[in-house]
Image 1 (cartoon, helix red, strand yellow):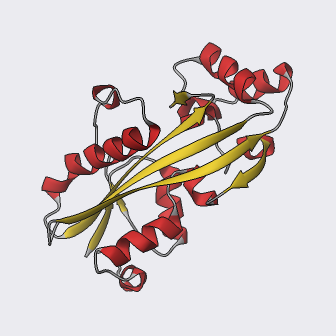
Image 2: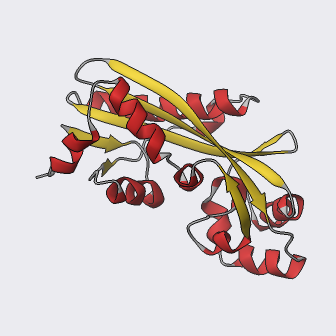
Length: 198
């Protein structure tokens, strides 16, 4: 059975590969602006489901996983920054603070029609960095493509002092949560260790 990742995220595909799953990455093309929810759990779970549902019809005998992440800080929900100025302002707000990184996971078994949707939440303590460092980091371009304006598996890892919860969830996909979801759908992770895509 093929494992389909309804995402163009390189980081998510690499996480799956590290766990022994050779996923086929398919960009969903879902317009995230169509889901204007203010609750972070509802938002990421809905977006993850919608992304997976865009891809489902193409794969009648597969597992399809959709994911979406946001950072909540001070009662506000943050996805990817719109521009350099927003990224700098965001980091000025984040530094020295603790945010919550929410990742929605929607896993569909298209052979059975069953699905499971779960949200992983990880606390993130940001370092109290200077304006100069913030601007230099934003100018690397890395924060521009990341929910919460940082990549913990890149240069942004320099500015994260502590995590409370799952590390891979912050990268974009909680591996322990995925393991639980596979079990709920009646699958073993071992199936995918043995599976080789043609």
